[in-house]
Image 1 (cartoon, rainbow, N blue to C red):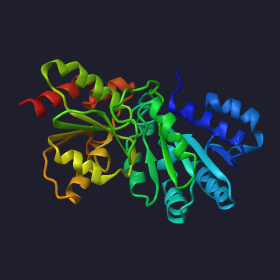
Image 2 (tube, rainbow, N blue to C red; image 1 turned 90 degrees about the horizontal axis):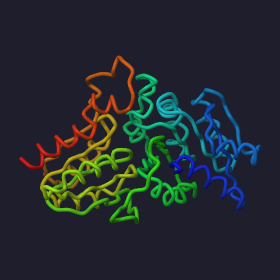
Image 3 (cartoon, rainbow, N blue to C red; image 1 turned 135 degrees about the horizontal axis):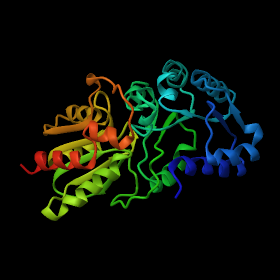
Length: 309
């Protein structure tokens, strides 16, 4: 099955064939769909080498010349190494560049702490005017990438290589950054990206006990704070789950929204506490999920302890 990255670049190719003036820049990073792209559109593909700062500034230069630009590279370097350029060219100058990074969360943890992508949502949230899309399944990717490719605003795309499935949703309209996966009562679970499916699987596993929470998938930052406040007001307890640092991530964004609306609800956050530092060893994604309490068993234990006692 396709993953969001392949869906995205397939759509880029289709739009160029239909006359849209799109240029793709890469920081020395290939992709199966880009192999076809390079052969068909040689003049619209440029690699700047392993130089993410150049990737962003070159993208903005082309955008200033009237091109619609997709800048593609390896995370976390697209966001961390090039943060100054993202802030000073994309954010401050409001160029409608789409920049995208492969890897999200702990998906590339086997390469070591330097390749762990757990701070990017926090960093880009501090850059005014940039919208982040953190898609959680292929169906969402297929729907949302048409919106992304209008090049109406600066956009950061977060691609997770382990997302290759389609989720069933109660709300597939994707309204203002929030999609409802499941409607329940009393309890609200809010998640994003890769962990949306994990949360749903865990909840389905314990649903025999009568546990039916509402599950929200936050797929866009910033999201509609008013709509989130409506959901929060209708539930007694809230849990957020993210494969990202707690400082400035999904849970922080949810707490900010509730505080801005004067809503007082118990909120528990599951994520990575950066104050504990980075791991000093190597391991696969599943290993680190267990290490940080983000595996199925750990999430189930928190749900049982928090909501049912």
